Length: 186
Image 1 (cartoon, rainbow, N blue to C red):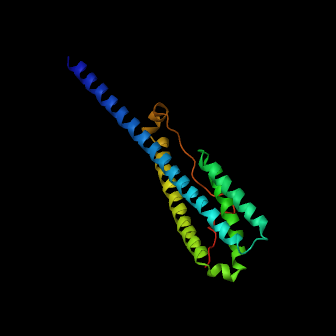
Image 2 (cartoon, rainbow, N blue to C red):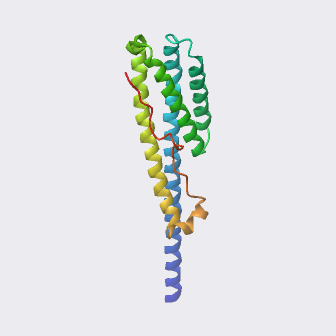
């Protein structure tokens, strides 16, 4: 009788631990997914600022058609990448948009009247704030992924990862050569 009670208690403890492990893994996976969504929100916010910035600059530099097309194409790429879960695609689209913004800012530098325009200054300020928020969102995502990946790779959690349908996630890494945030100058 005592052996049956001990085995019963052991089974209950193991089942409770399995439930706790399952919930902890799923919670960490959801946190990483939420953090990835935060990156999407900030990338989309930045992409939404771009048309206003482009229109403001167009008024001063109508002959810079190639720069405007590159910015528009990069913005579309960010919106497409934000719709999916492919982290490297998001990073590549982000880097392409950053590069296009650097070129747009270079055009703006050539027009002193534009740099003094209040709308342009306000858009540049909003863009700089958004860049900070994108950076924070990337770091938040990478922290969530680190926590999840640590769970998935360590005992006893790795034993429950397949049951919870949780796997390690990729870190958000900017493509090589695109580590720097575009310089925004007023």
